[in-house]
Length: 233
Image (cartoon, rainbow, N blue to C red; front, side):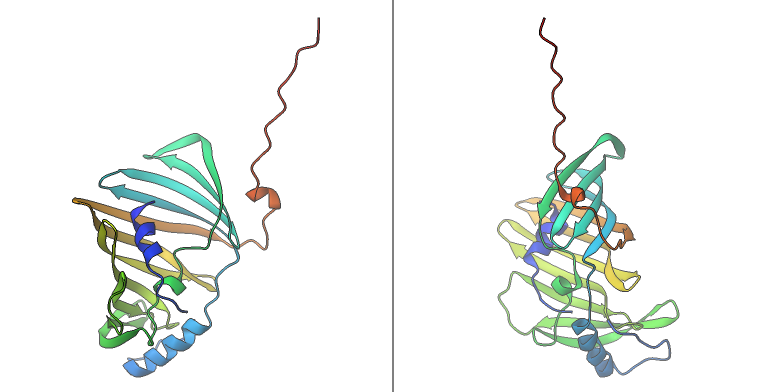
């Protein structure tokens, strides 16, 4: 299991866009109200195709490029390149699983966190709003300490998190962006101590497409071709 995925799997901090304004600075409490409303209306694509690259340095070194086809929980994962070299025959894996890198897994809620306004940062033609996050209930294996809310749609632009687990202690950040009507991951980075060794990982997502449907064969293992037989002599 890769590092960002391992930390993300530990992250089940529950939750969930609306449209915003490009004017001056808003009251920080109003931003939080819009944030809570935006989370309740987030939608995730049921059918989506995208690519991602994963780079890891540490106990194991990884450099891979993948293409993902997803319909609900059905996933086709194609490995396209390893260590910068395109595969002549892509490796294909099929699985049934929920998406790990979603707003719902990373956005801190007001019921679980105290959010303290720290300031704003310029983002194109609007401001983003930065908050310090403090867990209201201690003792969990994952916690968030920084949230940046996009000032245009009031969804999380970036979330910084920490995680501890059996033999793993690390921290990371995930950034989200707009792709059509969806708010999806763009880049995630993480570093962690695995035992006594330091590991670092970076995942970059892109090439999102949202077809209306995918043929069932997308998620089915191809049947082997029949073996030719020689005619009897």
